[in-house]
Image (cartoon, rainbow, N blue to C red; front, side):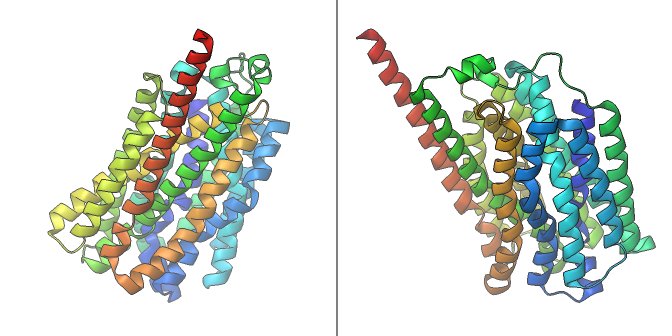
Length: 401
């Protein structure tokens, strides 16, 4: 289940994230401004937002197998359609439709992994599953520029469609129901979750809302880095497109490894949110440093790009795991769809807003902006921790009385 989920997720990230690797080629071929490139790169995310909740609810009703197979097959169709059109708005529409179909994978494959693994291995498993996103993006960053240079942009999109179709067939053949359903996380069983006291249920719902808000702040940092690091290194600092794409790929691979480490770390500490707080504050420090280094020595800029890339990429799996564990009974797919909807709504808007901001204020201010939402997310996660700690203290005092 983990391997199939990883392959399915990687097949979608090749165009969701990896498309930025051929951003300069798309911009040149279509005559786009930096803001218009942001619209094009954000189109798949916009499509995601349109259907994530629907796919999540469909997963709760029909289970993962049919949802993933149908969604990936539709993704392949719309990517083939993308290869045959030109112009900003036709390309954006086709990519948005491909994103709308690919949203099926996000909640369904995550739900499958969470249900197949118990709490003590869930963070590690979800970290592995989430590595498929940067791995798929890294593969795209390495291969798409070569495909575009040798055979054109249309060939690159048709290749992405072939990968999505392979993932659809794999999902239909191998995705199955778990012999023991671990859907209800730390509560253990559906009966335990249903019988929760009202105050604990309210605290759980409040924590879920706060985790989603913190994730929205962190995804702003991720979308900023992923959308414009190649453009900054190539267009602003003069690296070749191949070299800039290589830096992007190394950052993705480093982030993939960090996702596994962070997930494993969360399995071995009582508070699964603690590693997420550390990552948020590390991201804030890294973003501020990267902003200052944009016009500094090129070797330092490259190293900082890889480090910051690792920070902005590594947190998703852990946040996904926490949201799944906090989900109400029988609503894991819907909850994961809700979290992803919030994330991708912001990810779809951020490239245009930040691209416009960079055109006005420069790349240094644009990448330094990463520090602001990252620090806000860290402070919000600290607040969640303090509320939980205070709640435990009050409960212990009541028990003593």
